[in-house]
View 1: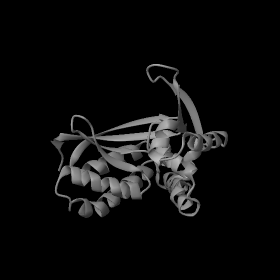
View 2 (view 1 turned 135 degrees about the vertical axis):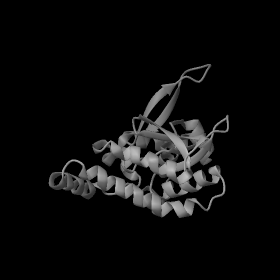
View 3 (view 1 turned 90 degrees about the horizontal axis):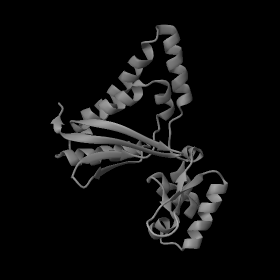
Amino acid sequence: MLNLLREVLHSPALEIIQRLKCSTGMPVRQLCTAMKMSYMGVKQHCVELEKAGFLDTWRKAKGAGRPEKWYRLTPKADGLFASPDLVLTLDLLTTAERVYGESAPPKLLYSYFQAKTELLAPKIAKAATLEERARLLAKFRTADGCLSACETDAQGRLALVEHHRPLRVLAARYDIVDELECEMIERLIGCEVRRSLEEVSGLVRVTFQIKTTAHKE
């Protein structure tokens, strides 16, 4: 939804939301630099977004001087980003459980992720290196609404870092969703990954740390 809004509105407020979504929060000065806008221009939009309930703030020490105000998204902003309509999916899984027993939803979810893996595997396999596979997978994951990026830390370790969870509602109901998603990523890139989740207010950061020393067939 946010991408569609940006096409018709071109509002700095939408850019602020997009940049904050892909971060752990930012002060106005950082937003100004990234957006090449004046401090007061960015500040005004942040204040309006906070009043509307899309942003909240906290103070963060910056060394000398007073702590700096940082902005981050609230859960209300989550609705601006792509997510599948999961109401029907949840209803179908609930019906399957009632008719076929409690093992039915996990089996259906396993089949879904298996089919997704089989669909992406030939496309990912075209990449020659682990990093190329990870970057290609990040593009496909972003297309699915995950806001995914392949990042490398100071030690040269690769990770997929994602700032949106389109299947959050489904995972809250069925714990196996996160496990199956992680297994799908392992199969597609050919390495073991370790998943971690950080959620604060409306900020989401899912990290799939790639263990390059442990290759998986």
